[in-house]
Length: 218
Image (cartoon, rainbow, N blue to C red; front, top):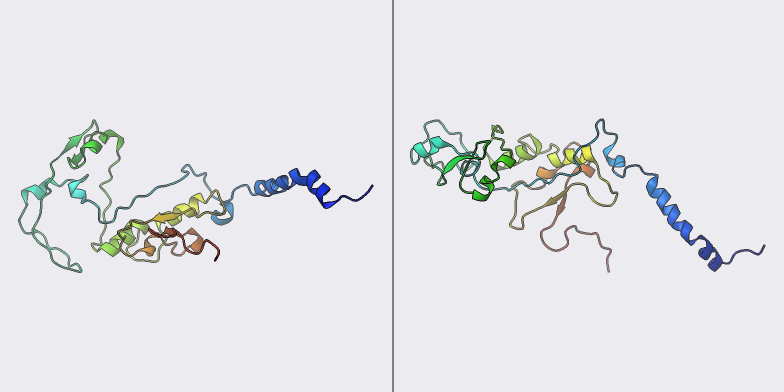
């Protein structure tokens, strides 16, 4: 039998090359397993979208109205106030928005969001989250990591660790910033903390290339 020429080999074996690639993909049961490790429980969530609106609307003007503020409007604080960075504390200011209860659940909110109020029974409002810190930077750390100081894994890093990723080429935890800036303290809010850096958030830039140095030089 005469040896195969290169052209004849490619003609006969061309379909086999795809099979070799497919076997390589199928040999990995979970692309995220290499980074996430074995999980004790099966994850119910497939993905998480977390909207953190730094400097957003006040809670007393939206979903946590305080009726006492209207009664004390314009009066000085009746209790001692802890010092802050600026320490420029004025008198009490009541909310300019009217509050009432909506839906069968009776969730109390203001009329600032009339369309959302119509969907009151589809909402879950949590008012028990409090903090002992009153500064913006510490508050951001506390909200994202559970601790008022930098150096701890963010909630996104923990989710990245717990859920893993279904691909080997894209980050499982990305951060989309507002082009106007923020949040205060920046990257420590989506840090991996004490965990490996693979679990930290990949920040997308607000202009130009979302991620630098992905394209080879010209």
